[in-house]
Image (cartoon, rainbow, N blue to C red; front, side, top):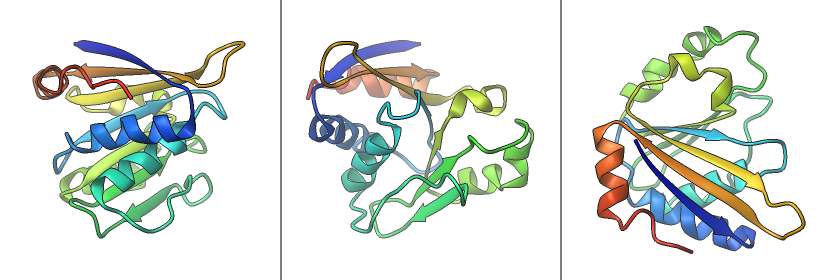
Length: 159
């Protein structure tokens, strides 16, 4: 496991870090995004989408559960599992199909379904920094693919 911590002082810096992560994405990748309400999870996904070349709007799929973003280097499947009743509901919304569809799967509130996520993934935790502007962003590469990817990119260059 490789852990990298960065600080983003603004939404723009959050987007910039996410664009760098987008450069690492391959078809079938799974990213778990963690953080409280307002921590910047959707802002991070917006940066990922821009980094992949997605030009359309990117918002949280809180009520629809899934947004599919085409038109980039690879598709981006953005899931919000906050409203799932139980972790096993992840299968009911087609998680395995999305992983097999040749895009990157990004899951907001991933801690709610963590036991069902693949061992090979990138976890991203965002939290507000008390008394300061900005966010603390922790990237945790799980499995050889993500450990190597983070290490080869200079451990996710700073914003």
